[in-house]
Length: 322
Image 1 (spheres, rainbow, N blue to C red):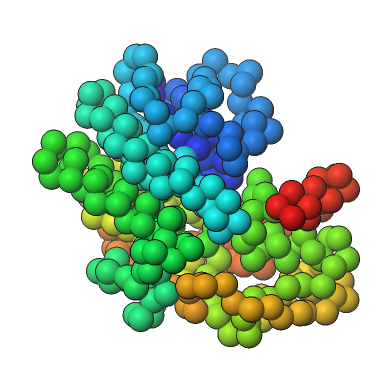
Image 2 (image 1 turned 45 degrees about the vertical axis):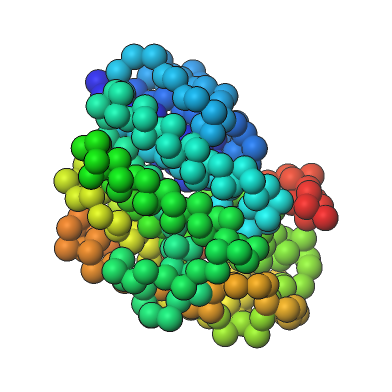
């Protein structure tokens, strides 16, 4: 039975990856400092013999006894609200944390996959964004703490691959959604649904013409799993190329929730990308992967999840960062 370490295990994506690897018959070691993660996301796994959990910050020295076959590094704040609140921790988990885990992968002779992001493309001048595009990122802007942490993460990962021969993979993740997202994480999908459920107007930042491409979490996990087991070492975009404007998306949420909320507009945050759409040619050709879940289907599942939350959780989602 192969053994995998998943950092950020109590987060949105990390918890779904834990589920997938348990389902595939792996021994799973979860690790999280719980700064943005929630043990509720993985509490169903604690009763299993082939799951163990370490409450630990990977920015500090990482030790895991026993053999490891794979390491998936998903520890990081991933929403603007989070990384603007904790910028230093965001930089450290992308730099020091990645360095620590690459050292562990080297020592254990494990394959390591890092979770990079479409944010390495910044506010892109190329559309859609292929892996060969180097990006348009402001390193000293408010979003730079996340964007540059991920760009450094890619650079040191490739250095360990070329210099030390560590088996590494790099996935560039585009907007992903699904159950276990935090309503208060600041991203547009949970923000819109949370506002609809609380009977509030939907807030659009900017004029609503900016675009996003939303990928359902099960599709993303499938792409990550295929990349991990491949022999490909360059970055691979995993996302859904179905592009939509934020204004159109707000109308979809209003229709889905059956609410009568108005849409209000506020100023666009600094360096917020105007366009976001993955070129997934590489994923199609190398991994034989493309998304299967339609936005209509995925949104229905996600809305049902958020609707199942208590009124207390809905209230906390509004006030936590105020």
